Amino acid sequence: MGFRIAVAGKGGCGKTSITTLVIRYLKKNGKVPILAVDADPNANLGESLGLKIKQTIGTVLDSFQHEKIIIPSGMTKEAYLEYKLNETIVESNSIDLITMGRGQGPECYCYPNLILKKFIEGLSDNYAYVVMDNEAGMEHLSRKTTENVDALLLASNHSVKGIRAIARILELVYELKLNIKKKWVVINLVPGKLDPLVVKELERLGLKPDIIIPEDKELYHYDLQQKPLLEMPDTSSAVRAIDKLMTQTLG
Image 1 (cartoon, helix red, strand yellow):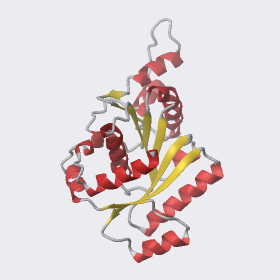
Image 2 (cartoon, helix red, strand yellow):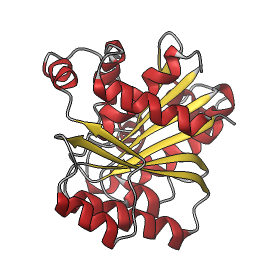
Image 3 (tube, helix red, strand yellow):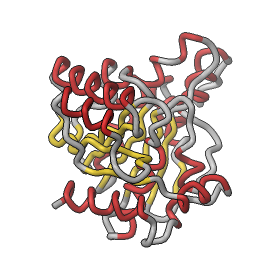
Image 4 (cartoon, rainbow, N blue to C red):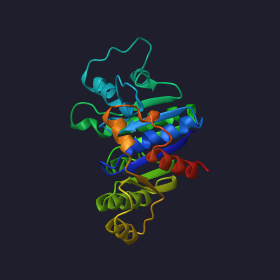
């Protein structure tokens, strides 16, 4: 089974950028092949990686639920679904991507998560590393999409609310007794030093940041120009911070 890395945190904390820079580190250091997993219904990891997504787990499941499927002779519905799910894999040099997305209707949110979890389990043995960009909030934990993880990066932006979200995620991890070997607290988008109010909240909750990622104008411009973050230069302050964290994580 591949080494699993998951990124979790509140919305707007930069999870997708962190996930992409983790993948950048792995690829640059020859830690391949990599399976990138976009487990957020609001999928944008593909754009950050510079990969085009044609279909998602959600759209495949939606077609099975709401359309009349003609299953080839000699195949069961389950075997044909697995075949169609494999078509959602976007392949590239050293990195493959699968995207959860979501189907039509309110009932299509939880089911893709369950299918995604089973799908990842089946694929993991083919990759040295699996890196998952999770949805905002804690639903992925309660549905146990994020479990059996080697390193969980708990991401927060430079805010008290973000720090509290990390604390709630940790509480749920312990409550559900999820199998997570390492947990890292990552404070992202920090303008200089940590604000005293953020430091106070970290201390109140008994949290200590393992890595601080400064605001990075280069990353901002790459994102604005829709350039793949895999192409970020080594001089980027965000790249240097993630590289340091990954050296610690895999050391």
